[in-house]
Length: 309
Image (cartoon, rainbow, N blue to C red):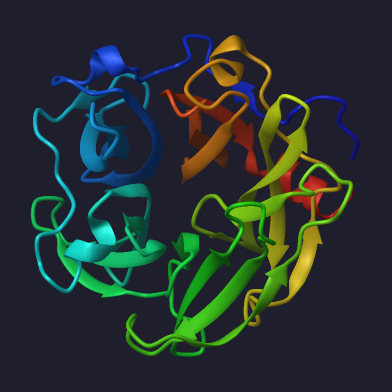
């Protein structure tokens, strides 16, 4: 299957959430995790305040398009001495994964030592319990698989990638969400390609008959700065460290003005995707570190691209 355009169709009223939709003062809103909870679409928004420190706030919707944002932040930098140093500059870029009925939230903890991945959980999106800081610095873009594989939790991360350093996607395993090991490289960026600067996982994997579908972002440098685009891979269901297929090129990149102009231009950064009953994928993505947009695609089209059909 060959497509000369993106398999994703942008919502015609994008962006769907902007700074003006936040019921309190802030600089910007972007990079939202997504899930279904009690027949509602729920987004966990990264909101940057006027001091440049990020926190996470919930937005809710009946139709997945029109969202009402909570009046108060939900997850803010911790004052717990075990976490305070590592979250002092903000909590960022969340992802939500439901495992065995519990909603786990991975996020980037940003503090003076650098960035690392935090993991917490909730049952009701009211109480939030931190579980661990799962990585050392610098490491971000953490996504959990929605089920244990061979009895273990599985986490995808991106060590490095900051300040021009190498940034590849890794996979690790844990019996308890605290102790992680058996780590190995899952994907490496390709010099000269559309993701030649670094890679990073975007959305938690979706289980399909052909494998685990993972969306990821690739970054390429240009004379005007970096460009963030989206690709997809299929991973083996039982051995998720093995690639079954991958899109031969990026499948979504900055095109619209709201994706090209903002605090950080030329950025498409998904953190959440929801699979509808008709196998439509609803992807929520940050645009230019300034707002949140939504696009849809058919699951079948993405899988065919991964398998080069």
